[in-house]
Image (cartoon, one colour):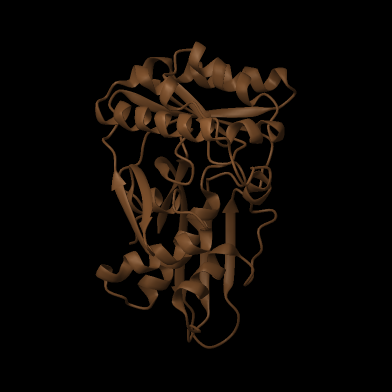
Length: 296
């Protein structure tokens, strides 16, 4: 299996919007003969500290999505390229990978695979990473009663994704704890307006509107205390030529949408902004992923 990284929120689309990126985790699973525990091999991101037993997030998602005990031990080989705790969908990719492994090994028909995707969303607690990781592209997710639904937005043309990743981990749970339970009415209205601008910017390919559309007052002002240099990095990306920039998910990575010609410059500008606040970082210029999760 190959699961893409994702950036979510894109500013005001909190827990709704997500975009798949061309940076991937690979998961290989095979059935072992006899009895015994699963075997887990991990390379790449997190190889020095991720658990290699039933506590591993991929294995936990597999068991929960499957709903019954698999009759043979499994060998798991994981090659992780998505950084951990940076707001790039590493936990969503792990949960989706485990759920899709359950779908494949239980020989469930592909017409029922969306049920396993929905299970991964339930485990994750929000759908904005899992849905684009599965379907690819730029997706919005919402619920009608208990039914999870999604829509795709138009593919960006002439843009690249620029991600700047500080050497700072921000666990999602910590980033959610700093958010208020209620927000001022003015902030709710501004968020609705900005989200409308953002959606129409993609649909009409009016990318000059992305700076306004990716402006956020719902979560970034509260999370900036966790990420020194956040606003400086976002401003630096725009000054370097990016159309818009926002915190990637719950951070600590920041994400910009840039014309191809300015993409590397925007990434370097964000890295310099973090460096001025004492944070090392690295920037990546990435394509968008439109294939979504692949199971072979």
